[in-house]
Image 1 (cartoon, rainbow, N blue to C red):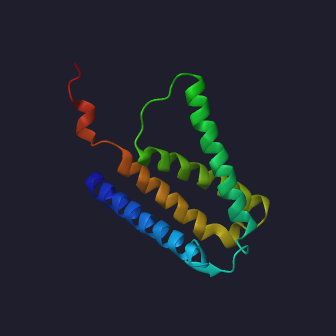
Image 2: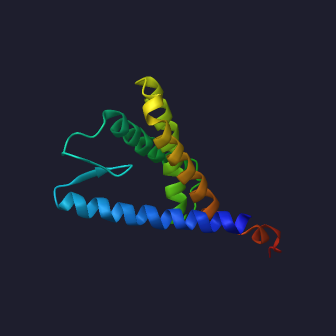
Image 3: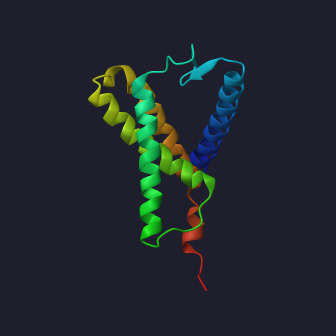
Length: 136
């Protein structure tokens, strides 16, 4: 079961990577695309999504800043950063949607962010057998 979740997590990461590449290429062609596959004219992105992303970036910076200040920073893989960012995106997205009273409109977007976070969390964990190895 754990192996299947890890494979699903890696598949979601691959799909998100392809989606991000597509969005960047589309933007260079003056086409703005935002999740989930909506094309808009430049400058028409929902303010709630912008606020959620802005807060998620700030919370992620705060997370790593506090770890650094207290000397708890360790080397991490990019997937660990993605997991932390997605976690804060779910938190800030829920807060912003509730604050702007658009929780019904944004429910599926927040649920998909939560699913991506959970799968990236599973994909970033080492195999269970690594926990029981002898340490020297």
